[in-house]
Image (tube, rainbow, N blue to C red; front, side, top):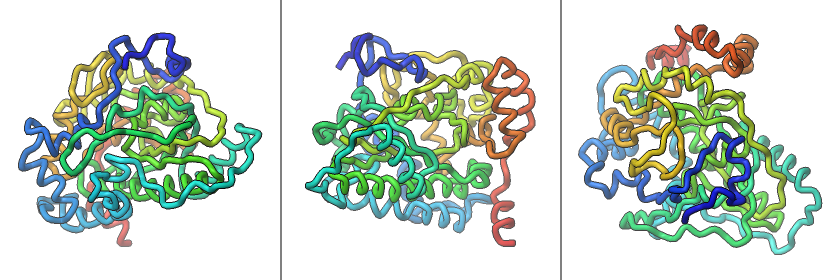
Length: 390
């Protein structure tokens, strides 16, 4: 579907830092690089098969600090809750949370709670999200452009319908902070535990919050990587701004987050996107691109990508997914060096980092970049284990 420049869903694109062209096409989930690794022979290899096998401890390599058996053991254990949940629909080709939305564990209550104040309801949802463990929560209106044009049937990797219940009006976006000390050890299998832990956390949180909404009598579809692209929804909800490293930079946690979402009919008031100044900082900073071992991250200005694993018709910084995933496969674990070295990867509860953030988002951004020049070095995984055993 081609969206006109005056399409209602584009009303606050500029404030969200999103630029959509007339060549826009909704993304087909089958072209996601992780899905392509199962069906696209230009991507699939012995290394990619070994990458997935390592999450079952079937092919975990033993090659030095950060890649020992206990590193892989912790990483894989951190994924357990997410794995249990995502495996439930395997027989029907639905890998829940990844290639299909999370199935309802509770029905929609037949009696609908009366909600006369959407703004108050939004505040309540944010409070309940925090109660269940979400670090961030915001609301945006449903924007169909970011829904996948089709999902994937994992039995044969074919396209499958990507349907939502009728009447969906809003998307609740949840942020889940990754462990700062583990992120500091990227690239390593140990660091992958920071990713897996948040997938397991978000699986529980998003399912519980969706169940709460259904108990009120409204549709609520719990979603992680499935159904639609979460980054545009996070931008639209005002949680942060898109960066050169392909991540959402938030004022609370920088790039150190995983995101999940809930599609709902619950009457809510949407939050508004806001420009922070991240894009201006990224225009003068290339630390992530410089640090990428396979040069998968872009230099220069945002552009329109023609890559298979990238959405068409959106001007943005776009990584080379084939190079990136190839490096993951070689290591048998995920890589987030770009997250580790990002100048925004800081603890913003500390005063000195709050001051730095103000500089970075102001006209003094060059000074902020200079002040960051000695940060972002990798911490040895053995150091993390030694600290945890004291």
